[in-house]
Image (cartoon, rainbow, N blue to C red; front, side, top):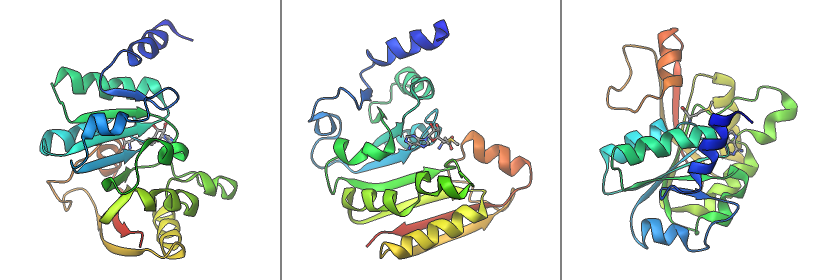
Length: 210
Ligand SMILES: C[S@@+](CC[C@H](N)C(=O)[O-])C[C@H]1O[C@@H](n2cnc3c(N)ncnc32)[C@H](O)[C@@H]1O
């Protein structure tokens, strides 16, 4: 492993805003967010740009970025510490294990910005909007909680809409926009900026899962 990566992995273990799913305390979520604070999570957060932006905009909310890639998480966690954000945390874990780390009914919003589209049929069950994942998210959401998807991949949107219907959920809203006609207030990660720069349509969808 490259030396820089090793140093980042070692640093992750010592950062107060990072939780390692393989060795965390059972009450870490309560320690981070208490019993009542509204919590927004980002799945597959990469460098945590979306989580950081949400935490800056809404200091009253707890924001949690989840990713299995430690080197990327390190960037988000370091930026949060540098900015003095006390409401942003990062969980290093596969999304497959989310329900072991988050208590039921404690999440207000789930954001999935630009998930890996995994276009091959044999990869479908690994998409973060596939039926098995949606079934994992449902018990974590508070009543009225929603899932937000953003992607440039229209096939993934169709796939997600079908999966949501299969689990008994429904579409709450959405927008298809191109550079220039987007909601200026919405958070844009580097992926979104790159795709908008190439003139691609960005699809946003909100779902409830009940
Ligand atoms: C295309 S990147 C998007 C990053 C971020 N959402 C953004 O818009 O900048 C997808 C991220 O999802 C993470 N990821 C994919 N599947 C995952 C899984 N099952 N569990 C945890 N992380 C996952 C990858 O490690 C990667 O960092």
